[in-house]
Image 1 (cartoon, rainbow, N blue to C red):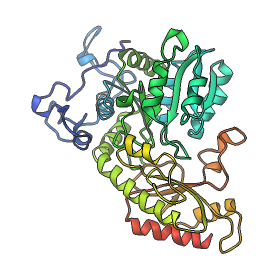
Image 2 (image 1 turned 135 degrees about the vertical axis):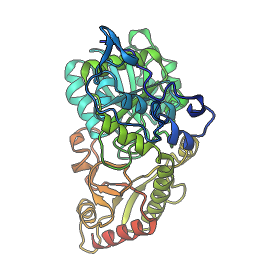
Image 3 (image 1 turned 180 degrees about the vertical axis):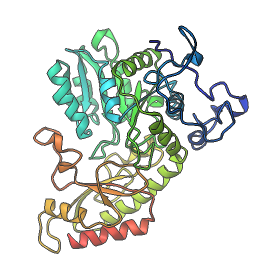
Image 4 (image 1 turned 90 degrees about the horizontal axis):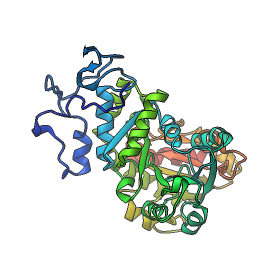
Length: 417
């Protein structure tokens, strides 16, 4: 079955609807991949809910479309949209962020090495540690914020350098351009420079564009900020390197972890408001973080936008240089004590169970605000490892509600805890 990427509806539409490369991201978010339908002019392009396509002749598929696992017009729109937003040439969509993780990781063979940031999503750690490592792929967790640590870790076995920024859940920042430079100066597996992979889920291209900073691959759990409404599961990879895109498309088809067209439509719909949502998420997160930083019963606040006081982010300057805004995620640790004299971990659980606007739930990046305790929720799989997170750490995903309501909700929860 051919791996060629078909043009898809909208690609050859009238030039008046083509994406202008000079447009700002706010405009691209609305229009990239969203061209009016080529056949009818429908402003909301149709969902191609089909499993296969009639061919004009034997071996002569119309427009290159043969079978929906391999190609789908709605998926092609999403892939084109995310590639455009990331400043890349190629996009490849998957059934989930985890499916994207698994597929990218297939670029490393047994006895080759993946250097991974030392603060990552629990599911990423689980796959690397429990699946790839037993298969013979070498996995090393490295503090990517340290140039010396990265330089010392790079070796002739290194195939991939993989990290999140901001990281999950500590919100550490990694200097993407610096890591990319270090990789280019190193000769890794197969005598090639290591492939730099950035999980851009916590930021989204509305906040930072890793490929423009030298990364080879940027990818997302599109479930989060790209879709933005907590109603779909999806993953998308973007790259500017044609040979990587060709290999990833082959794996996408061969492994079969592709998203359905309706899920792609939901992400496309979410992208249209991404730029606006990113700004509101960040405004609310800054207001929440500032409130938490003022409380005596909060031991630690971690937010890239905090620049002053005892809770100032240690990499706030990097945030200003690398990120458009500081993002919508906040992590903090309550102090022991409180109204009931609880320890910090007990207070963390109590306050998470007392919020009314913040929903107690895993995930992030939706229009609604979420709260969780990573140690027993999203990061339970890192327990007992060097990546283990404190039991008292609380992670917030700040939605787009009124900031005053979010602050009031957290205040009453902290007062009760």
